Amino acid sequence: MSKGILVTLREHLKNGDEYHLIDKNNAKTADITSADKIAFGLDAASPEISLSLEDLTDFSIEGKAVVLRVIVHCWMHKDSSAADYLADCQKLHLMNISFLQRNDLLNWLSGQTETSQYITGQNKAVTSTTEATEATVASTEKSNKTAASARTSESKASTTTTTSGLSNIEIIQKDDPVLYKNLQEERTLVDHNSSLRGNKPIDFRYLIKDVELKLIPSLKGSSSKSGRASKGHVSKTKASSKSVLSKEPIILISSATSSMLTLANIKDFLEQSKYVSPKDITVTSNKDTVIVEKKFEKISKPIRFLIVNNPNRFTKPEYWDRLVAVFTTGHTWQFSNYHWNTPQELFQHCNGYYFHFNGDEVPKHVQQWNVQRIALDKHQRFKDIEAVRTFWTSLEKTLLARGYH
Image (cartoon, rainbow, N blue to C red; front, side, top):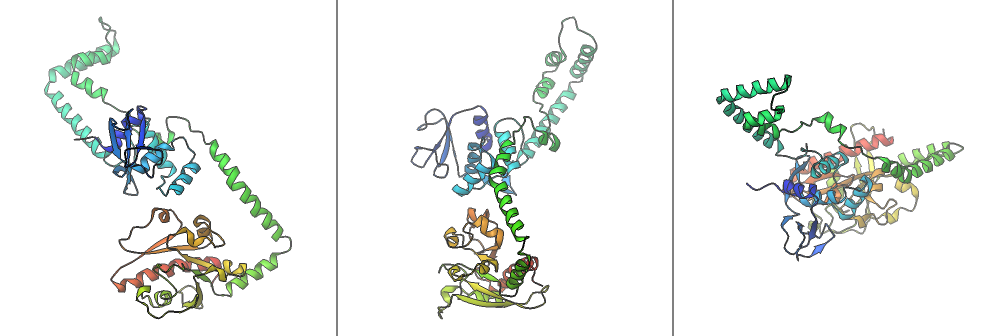
């Protein structure tokens, strides 16, 4: 049986073998996204061994196998900080491996540890090793005379110095080769506690620099703003908050004609739990706003929502304060003229929702956004009510947190 992909990769990496990324034209490339294979050997045209970057590996996250491309990209950033690695993953739209999982993987690939808790199949290997050991013990028990002689020799060697000057291991090697071979294959067990202690000191000073560059300036800015507000604008802030709560909260949707939810079908979907494809709607309207009303269980009065597909109508800052949800199609150009024009910043200020059909693949970059993914059935319309209920339940929690009662 051939060795696993990860085991083969590990053998070359821990030995320091030179590797190349090769594209579909068998040419070297430094771009992990355009590469097709990773090859080991001095000659990239005819390497000693090559592995496809699209193959699934035994390394799994939340029960899902990770492709070799993500593993190799993680190894390429073995000396990078967590912030730099995450930034490159977002730039290349590649899955990022969390800090603990990444540290576990890199230690295993470099040969610093012999096991990884995120690699499936190792339990089977342990079981096979155990069965082999048991079989060896059984065969050893059959030769009682040899085993007894080995134990006697070992006991004598541990208390006195033999005339030949042999050590315990040398005696076992001479009297019982099978036992000696098993002892040579022994490995130190790694549990949760010993894994956390690690086998080398890790320098976390790069995190101090990240905090100084990213967190401290924003904290200083927010503290200075709160200080100015506390000196004479308290009553104005309270009045502004009450003014926002007294007006319709806003839901922004995409203006793209290819979007699943548009102004043409959003009202029936959110009020009647009935989805109709925009392609099947013949009646058109020039309106760029729609009113949707909803009665919640934990909020005393029904709330009217303003559905908007064009943020250019937001002529006052208060409109962005009233924004409670954004429906995204997964395209970043949708946020280009928003007040917060990056997904990372936008979805810290309001809820994000990504509606899609069951069976459709969710883009990797959307999976990394702070958005709730809600799936609709392509044909069974009676299931729409469940999707709409999921949306309203999520939004109700946000409204309660903002002060709607």
